[in-house]
Image (cartoon, rainbow, N blue to C red):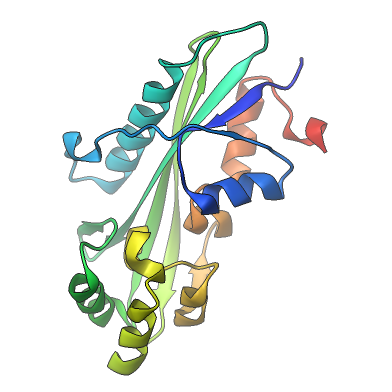
Amino acid sequence: MAFPQFVLASASPARRQLLHSIGLEPIIQPSHFDEDTIQETDPETLVQALALAKAQAVANAITLGPDPIVVLGCDSVLAFQGEIHGKPADEAEAIARWQTMRGQSGSLLSGHALIDATTGKTLVRSRSTDIHFANVSDTVIRSYIATGEPMNCAGCFTLEGRGGALIEKIEGCYSNVIGLSLPLLREMMGEFGYDLTSIW
């Protein structure tokens, strides 16, 4: 089976880089879906619903040709002490959040929705990774927030950037924390009949 065109329904540079790292050259097509239209209190339900909505928005806009096309939508949140955290609203919120998270642990959940645009077949999955935050000082927290790095990140940190110095350990899938689980994607593509290793 010929490997399909792969569309990423996200503008995330981190997700794009993850796909590049395994040999995929995705077509970048942000969904522009209004995330505020979905209200869920369960983090797993939320990330799956958002990932699916993003993938559907892009898949519905695709003009089909002779070649197969798959669309991947993703969304991530941090579940911490019974609350769901996405991107911080401002620096003050980011500082306060880190002051609460330091020395504690939370779970980074990423939803994955894969749609075969040709057949309409859809898979929705999620993966969770436990994050253990370092017990850092207020000075370190303010220095990190001042870099601007965590302001566009679910959970207010990036594992692959400066924030990696503030994470004591993770338990679970590393790439999931960055934006999408590569092992999970391989499994989902396999369910569609596509072998990721065929492009290596």
